[in-house]
Image (cartoon, rainbow, N blue to C red):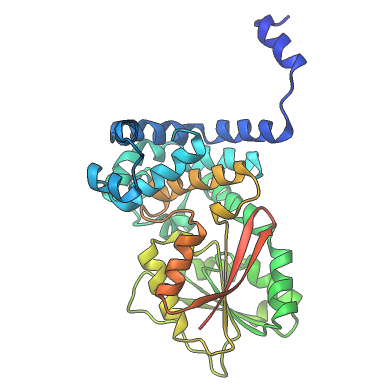
Length: 346
């Protein structure tokens, strides 16, 4: 017996296309932050400003008229573009949003206004989520790493071919190497490759536990470093360095911090060294649902991760690269679940 016979009849005779169904599923998964972003577009008066303008407004004009930061306005406008105001594995999104984000997004407004991850206080007193990863509740930690690894893992096979088959890399810095999952794939793909993981000391400890006893672990080393400290330099490698790998790493920082990190990476490069930046740039996605997920993920960075980073587009990332004194040599698109690799040189 159907409680709503009219609806049952409608959806038994009309079916959505796969892409439409995917889009609807993503809207459900990201529903809480869709609501919060829409609410704040109204509260901050952005929708009224756009409605009352004759020919629309630039982002700079909205920043000027609202008093919000450029970062806050950019995050809200990009989210609203995807929402429709002005794929990807749904199970991963659902768990990530429920376990990691849902209650923290109650503090999205304060996070946008203060430039700090005010929702992170739900879990602990850390300046960013990265310092607290090893201390998160087990289910939250599982969902965070599941979401993070799902998107990058699908791109690894193609990325390995680009780095080791096309460029014959033997020495590599894995910046923000996390659990060492990528480093292990590198040393098993290229039997004489040596990888140094640069990450926070507590992450290095987790990585060392994770790789212990596994094939190739003897060619993986760790270097504890806080890359938010602009006084901290990249370690120099005797004999030179072939590659610096940054996978889903730079989106964890503001544009100013990205420029600083790349500028310091430049100091250990030679003419032969390449930086490989793998990111899910939202403007380079094949399908609209992917761009939607990415712009929604920006608001996880706002409220939970660090308060000042986001999922960037190509223009933003290229600006940081150029400001650091580097240039993009080549771009590889549509790897795995929608990654791009920006190959950068001096």
